[in-house]
Length: 339
Image 1 (cartoon, rainbow, N blue to C red):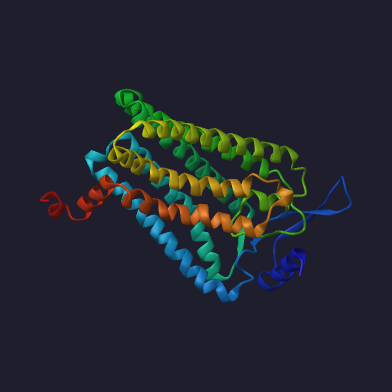
Image 2 (tube, rainbow, N blue to C red; image 1 turned 45 degrees about the vertical axis):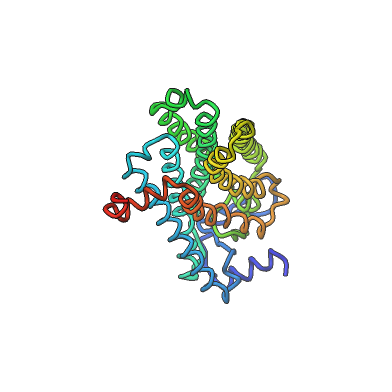
């Protein structure tokens, strides 16, 4: 069965009545539609797997939220962690928490109620927050790489370069840039008309699946999308790669194996997160919309939207002695303080 027949059959089974108003297209004889609801096709066709998916996604969501909140509380409650590195880590944990809350609760609600729809306005709002927080994650990972570069390669100037005002400026600039870039794409998307099909082969309102449903001319949007993808992918990733290239050179000059291990353990957590995040994003967004694969897109989205935010607390806490000590003091202050 081809995708069009699948979408039609699923719409008939799940939601037979939608508020769709036809208007005539002046440039062609085919009809366009002003759609008030979109239908997610992601998990609606796998009814036997839905209880398992619901339990799995709920567990990942709870671990993500609780784990990242614990990191924020541990950092804020321990004065010894009031340093630039942990300030950026707390911001990353906050972003990951919001990132998961933007998409996963709606996915869980859809699976639980068997109602796989979202309004046109709700779709645009979900897309905006998804893009804003994904871009912010991108910037914060680059900022954290720069912080590690200054700490390891320029240790004598670290307190001067990474002062409180500079750290606040870097985070504020990341928030502002992500907001403006996400808003510009959502504003363009809101102007599109959509064809008769309103079934999205995904579990949330992502850019590429929606582009395939648009009747309007999307060339300007695709140009902006790829320009932003290049800006947000190449520039921060270049910052990460250049920073770690300098760090590796410093590591090679350290004669002591213990010193090398200490530096590597400091940077290993960040590199793990960077690899997971950038790898899946490049897999999805650095391709033309015509060659977009729904299965690949959903699998990659689960990784960078659910798996990576869930793993971040474990990666940063289990591999970091200071974080483990802070968490221990947070949960059992008297016991830890006497050791």
